[in-house]
Length: 100
Image (tube, rainbow, N blue to C red):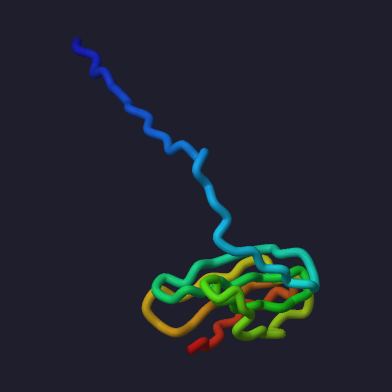
């Protein structure tokens, strides 16, 4: 009986050259989740206050805010092909919102 041997190569990236590009401050509550837009320079931030914020990370500006949940927003994500995002919170609701 032959026993197959597996060989693994582990690659890693050195993080000694990390440079902070920009910093955002929500000035409200703790950030619970983040999502990068697949094509635009946008970040969604879900907050403990029930707000979802849309940021332009190149300009460092807040584009829009959505007061969609009663309580913390636990997750957000952009749709890969449509101008939509989804959010879910402690209010037992999942919301789909349009962003252009």
